[in-house]
Length: 60
Image (cartoon, rainbow, N blue to C red):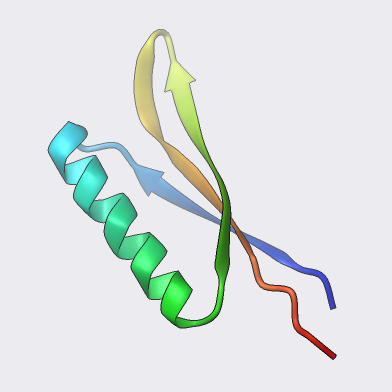
């Protein structure tokens, strides 16, 4: 079954963003999710957060 999950990570400064994105990716990877893409959410020139899209296709 083909499936995707999205996670929203709010922006809190470059260093914190980096650490939080790394943590979220690692946690989901341990559950056999594959990172598909990261899309920054930008409003008026400022990054508000990031949308992470994970593939969790199950092999039949």
